[in-house]
Image 1 (cartoon, each protein chain N blue to C red):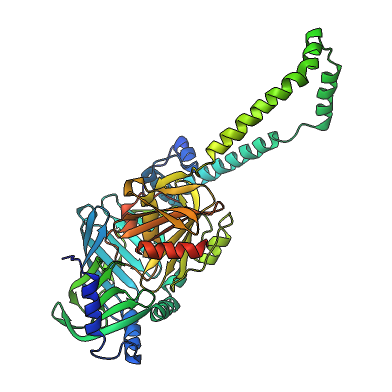
Image 2 (image 1 turned 180 degrees about the horizontal axis):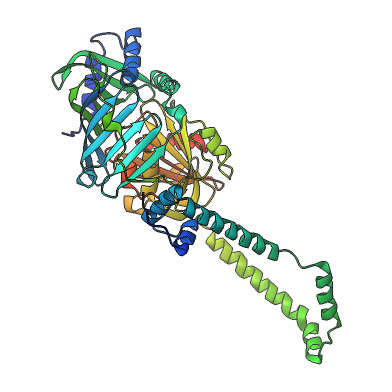
Length: 340
Length: 156
């Protein structure tokens, strides 16, 4: 199912989309974007999701049944990969319950509630509008349902980044394809056998008799990037990134016992993480055959792990690592603005 | 919930983070619902804190009266002929030895600081942490692998 798409063919698709239907920057386009982002809060549905991602060792595919009860209850029950057969995840607002059926345990992860608030969606919409232009086509079909297809093109790089196929009636995303900087498809998420109907609350009950486990975090850590940096315990930074990337979330993590600040930036569609440590520590890139690069006159290492790229360097005060599904030139450009 | 009470040794290991993750998780869940074990844990915590406070107290400087007594003893000690002879030679020996040590340190430090020698961590940890942070936002919820189920999780 996963296929590679050349940049040229995507550009052609973009050209074919732009003149059709509404104009690429019309109010109607932007209204449609708002409707797509807001749809899960009002539409209940169930179906089968198939997700494919390009990883370093090949493609990773998962299949799960999804039951979404508007506004904020979602259950995913996995049937593939085989090791997750029978496992499930229940998401309610900012809480995720990962149900490990084989080990009879529930892993609870909690994200900052502000990230799930309506304001977060509005911020995401603002980021997408600031960094992308959409080319819409209003006469597609997917799984027998009429769709509106949109190609999101990055304003900074002028490259197609994502193709979304939206159910014309409900505005639920039925298919999403992501593309790397070079134009290759790096992932696809399909929602098949979709059924729009009220979902009863029963599937969202947690199983009885399971051990509840909470992942270890540094005490007092917060998802707010400013607080994370302030409470890091060393002179961490929250640098401004170029190309519309804004700080979205942060975390204090222990990577092999070394206190590390992790900051997540987004341009609305793509994300990149910046890791900072005061201790001389870098990711072991050797198995990934890294390239030597230059970041503001400093030696750096770049490597790719499937669709994800890593760039690491230091300014003799802090050790930095950027991780994201971005190209080499983009990561290098971002790194140079962090330590010019 | 696991109904088996942890042994005192297990409780100590649990408090010091030395148990395997699954057992640690089971004890955390058990202690949360067992007042008896919660009391035992609190008692163990307070004993640990007492021991740490005691250890810190032992790190204090010696009282000045004791220090001055030691110096007094040293000063009053009678030196031998050999000690007086070697003391007389000391500058002649110490200067070249000092230079040699300084040169050794200078060159060894310079060699060690040629390229930066940073410790390394498996690159996958960075990729996984990026995925975890990403998954906690409303931007992305279609990672093919449920991250929490895929990784080893330890209890808080």
